[in-house]
Amino acid sequence: MKWLCWSYFLIASLNLLEAQTPTIATNLTYLVNVPKQKTAKPPVVIVLHGYGANEKDLFDITKSFDDRFLSFSLRAPYSKDGACWWYAIEWKNDSIKTHNYTELKESEKQIFSFISQACKAYNADSNRVYIMGFSQGAIIAYDMLLRKPNKIKGILALSGKLLPQSKAIQTSLKPNENMCFIAHGRSDNVIKPIESEIASAYFKSLKAQVSFNSYEMPHSISGDELNDIKQFLKKQLDPPKSK
Image 1 (cartoon, rainbow, N blue to C red):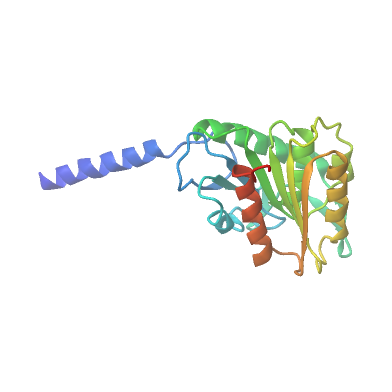
Image 2 (cartoon, rainbow, N blue to C red; image 1 turned 90 degrees about the vertical axis):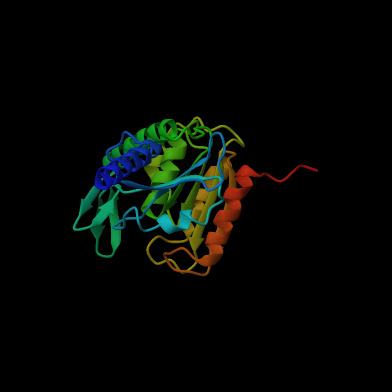
């Protein structure tokens, strides 16, 4: 009898836990960091890793965000031997020759679908969705904001670049409505620092609100940069009061 009671208790507990964990209709593998501070409709951060990494690479960073954020770290759909990517690139010597823009757009479709389904599943605020991408993830973030600025409130583009195909998008971005945190390491030998300066200038020309930051670091994320990321996101929730 005691064994039966314990079994029923265990099954009930597992069913309750499953009921409390929303299911997202997606083919993408992801990790989620739920808000520690509950709000009616939490704001969302979507994290996109760089070429060759996976959803675990940047996930711990989300744990340091403001407690009101709901964060998801996604795994890119293309992979081999544990390395994942959002789209294929072709190398020539030590430089990138081409970016497979067709695969980039296919990945974007899956990310946009994930955002829609995640907001429904978690009752999140679809008007406050931010994309944080590193390297290839930043390239995706730039493209997503230009393609559907009504779906993305802001981006945090870390050590990335703006592709010519992205600049060719006939964007509907409206002045002063979208936020851009753009950052790069001054000693980056993977993607040249000038690329983030070019992207910053482009989004400023579109009247987006741009914060450009450079750091003494290689192709990575530094402690100072992380502090600035956290401050940027907090300001999205608690903007400075106008005098």
